[in-house]
Length: 445
Image 1 (tube, rainbow, N blue to C red):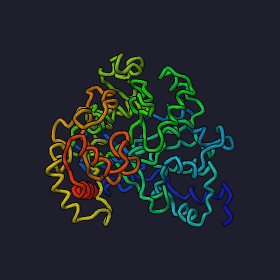
Image 2 (tube, rainbow, N blue to C red):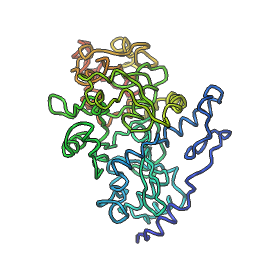
Image 3 (cartoon, rainbow, N blue to C red):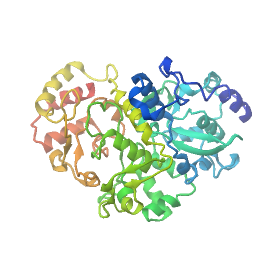
Image 4 (cartoon, rainbow, N blue to C red):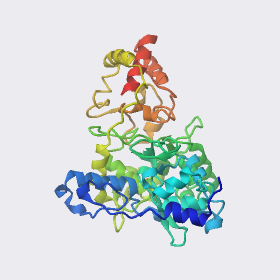
């Protein structure tokens, strides 16, 4: 079918949506694209429903001022626009954006947009359409700031960039938001590598631009290396990338430490990521990062003593924490496991696995950390953390994490491989039928 012109596409497909809707706390915050009026100094006085709506807005749409880095420093918005629309290079079309794992929130699209997409009247090869989607808050976890001329002034990212995906209900990569689900399609390295200017990252790490780009290319879909900007270790001793899989952000209520290697509480990690990884503007304190031997990059940059005025992060941590704790682990799809085998597997699990994966949290209540030797793996990633341990991962919603594999680096491609590993490393003595039943139980969580 003939594609409509760019002008009509932008006006009819995107112009009919009001992108700054009102926020009504009395209605339960049905539309969080507009920020609620907030009094962050009185968190205890606000109804929990309002706090959850506020936290959801922060999780989905707050950049914490990081657009000064992603757009102002890395100039990513120019790479997305392309030279034909005021930027540089070929630009990023919607097709390319979906290929690198970016997702589109169908609920953020106007009816005109949905109708045009269904009728194949939107040019998905045109970077200008990507710009329109970004400035409509329709791209999950990324916001484009309009220059008022059909282009981008800058660009920022949110928590949802890595920790939300969509249900593909409209098309692959387009659907309703699934907050807390890890986006294992997201190729963070490829996206950052679009930047026409990575000199700031190269200077931080003390390497060349080409070296930075080589590292970014090594990550692959669903992976990110938060510690790279602390210790500068881009590769393991065996030459494999040091990046780890994007973790789930659901099912954390009651869980002590929630990253692969501990580090701290949920609010700690939120502040860490918002400021040190997303490059938002806020105050952050962790003197452990002063260790010049363990964290040479962080120590040199003063990453453990960050001050910002204004602080755009700290006042939002409480509401963000509330919302994250409200994200329950999703139930596995119907008919995705053998129920009878899962019941048998539950007995195997209770006898062999429940000492660490304590129901209903499926991690230890309390100090849920272990050495590499205790779980039968190397210590490379644990050694990059302050405590040198691995966390016992909560097991609910494992089906959302199948893509990319299991454990922090995806070293085990399937649950069968995970069970085989523990059977061998911990000498569990499982029979083949017990292993099979145990896998079915894990799939049922």
